[in-house]
Image 1: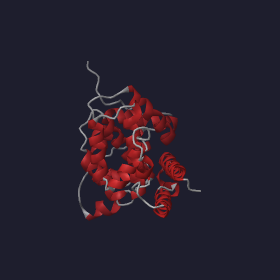
Image 2: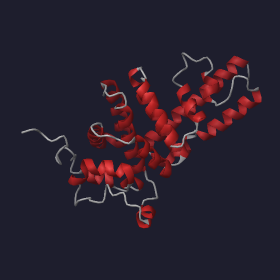
Image 3: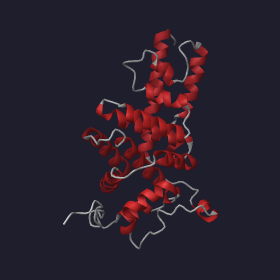
Image 4: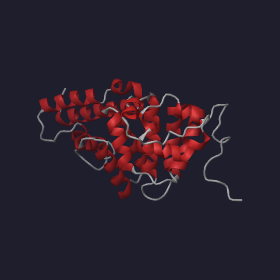
Length: 265
């Protein structure tokens, strides 16, 4: 008999905690809309006590008000869905991409939670995901700083196999647009991947032109350092905070590079 693609309840149980308790605990906006529908279609039938409303996308005022608050759990689920979008963008799932994602999941969810998150990711890779609708839902509920770090993560995942194909670039750009990310911020994140090929990467990272004055460089650095300060994503989980810390360091690196080029103290 052919085995179902959906993992059994036993596969989703680790140390007595079912995936229902792990993924539903404290969730907010992702229980509705396209993300809720995706998650519900996959594992709604095996949650403890039943969760028939998980994929409900009704637009009543009651539903909208009860799901307005975003939580760390919302960020975690959004991450997994967006990761699936990028990994499957080129029509193949590479070991290098999964290898890059696994440590991230462990750092985000812990050893036990990472196993469940990986199971969920694998099931999402089998689904048709409307990345535009998902991105728009995220844009409505997560603050700009968190969305920037989600995009930062997706760019890093695409680069995990040392080759970013056109399909991945296209879908990441679409996600950026529909998450409401400014073009300059998107280009700033990309610049960090282009240090070896773009002589002006540091200027792009600071969102300025090479013709900027020294004073404009200093102002741009202060503005970007404030935008990417890790404290702005403190409630989004340790891994997102680490992403912001990495970007913060990169902004400092870009500034130091420009200072060296210009002989600034």
